[in-house]
Length: 111
Figure (cartoon, rainbow, N blue to C red):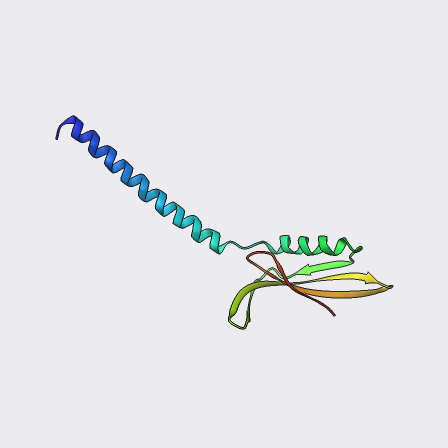
């Protein structure tokens, strides 16, 4: 094998290695992105900010553990939380559930 053949072999191997690395890297990023969830603190801050637009809140909470929820054929992981605020001189409680993957609020119930 002469020097020119060695360079071509090296360049071919390098191109092949870079291609495989890029392919594996992009697949890994896609897998990690699919598994990523929003933190419970981020979800709670989003809900609190929405409630604060209507008035002060007295307290809030969120469970840090995700729970699976199934509605019909759809299963998703959710966070449960709550907000307390003063309405007409009385403490009123609200509970909410939010999608752990997107942070979107699914339901809010006044108790």
